[in-house]
Image (cartoon, rainbow, N blue to C red; front, top):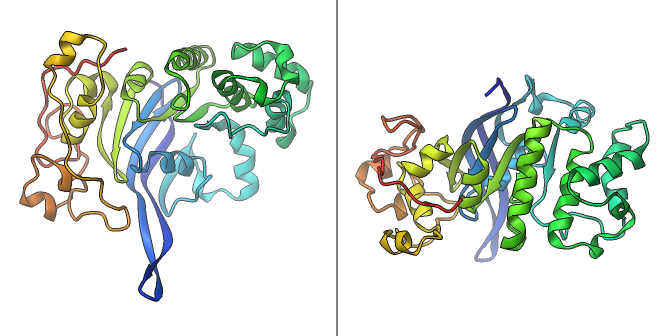
Length: 333
């Protein structure tokens, strides 16, 4: 991989909410993201995975400054995004874009898809033949150029997501944040969209921050994988290494829940069932945030928060007692 184009260091995002206590309304803090760090290089895909409420979508929105981080550093191509004034940030936005999760709500139903794709060009004041550019983008994502005159309701879910990808590519960005881009699609359609993203990355040299909860999809597309739980990174490393030798108990539990297409392998696998529900991000546990559901938690886990460091397993893990599972976890590709 080349030099990182995106560097996220110690990212923190806290939301203030009001809760009722008797007749009083009190302010409380939601610890959505706590000290997350990672890098993305040109042409690389980093997969950010975790269950619902882990903070992965908040990380993606903070990276784009759609949500303002509480603290931390976000450097894109050597520029500190948090230090940029609105005008400078707006000029730089053309170099990083987002594809939203729901293709049904991310497109304006009153605009033709051609108008939606051309809108970024107009906002950024790009000169030239916008209609020609729209036709090129539709062809790039596998849609007919004459589809530009249609409205979103005339397309299937997979086609709408292709329109969303075309819109994100309108300004020739270097980085795409993909916020669960296939989770709202039928399984039969997901493979086509994932293959399209891989083809576009190879042709255009794009970098992806791929946010998902489907680990089989992440394994297929991601070079490196970051596993999040309750706002913290639990494990980080090359996707194949994390899949074949997971070291964190949470990663092992996630992988054990992924079905495999081989009935023999599926019957032989040991499912790891986590007890209880994830704690509230308003009052996360002391020490390790996973300890309340961890099958190997000990006293030190409640006292000392484990750092995300390599303790000999070959990739960084935030666990006091990491253990490499040498039995490969078979996940369908």
